[in-house]
Length: 405
Image (cartoon, rainbow, N blue to C red):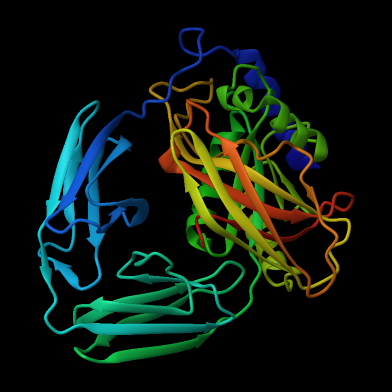
């Protein structure tokens, strides 16, 4: 109670200071874009940008590419690029170009990866190779050598196999059992005119980095208090208000861990947040929650969610939130001086009501989703947060996001 009272006093101070931006208008996001032409001496190579599959094959022109130094890689079975990766500078409203020289592999190696359960994503040297990079996986046409192998699956602990040696004219077979785990979710409420939110957001960001994306999911809502004018609240006014009302939020900053642990104010925030996370991460999950086939471009986003009930989920709801991982403004859009924001809530897919679940133990449900992209969003930073919540108790059964496959 003392923490919430302290936060309320600071909020009143922020209102007294004022609520307009520097020039009385909402600031603009400073992101700028160019395009990138990727070609290879042999057409049909899979294109990766900064380690992520673009969904394109050579030759292709990637549009709406963030400016700056970008790392490009390609993969085509039975061929090896002379340069494994190329760094390229993308400039605003300009088209950069990269070309990969591919040479035929004389003696090919193969890799098989099988997991229990299956459908785990396999990353080879940091990228997901092939049209279907999920287990059971068979990759042929690789060059002999050492490869770093990682196995990732929603609601399960990651496996890092380190460097695996592949030999010519041979098949290396890997079999791994995955361990079920819970992902805790932090929902945090903030406002660009809230002074204590500066410290709270910094503490939260540090805890999230320490915990890792495989353990903790984050979604940041913005409110209209202590003062109006927060552009991230205005971007999703109705959906932000739904969560504010759901948790009866009256003061910022406040965080909720898995819907049940409310943490207000900034006094010993790091310790209280870690305690709340430890309690939830130590609780067995009630579901396996996975997101597959996620795609986001300048016009649309889509994918599908798989839910496997480990407990009775009748009366629970699946919600799909859209977040933008990072937003940067040229000037602070509020009085607290912050210009960088993380995991910003952009709205719910298909509205605030969610999808009602009627799953018993062992039942499986697949939920496809799609939504239109706003012109103000950066498609390279858009992610989906999925969570299963009991409406009355507000407790989460499981959470997942597209940052961790």
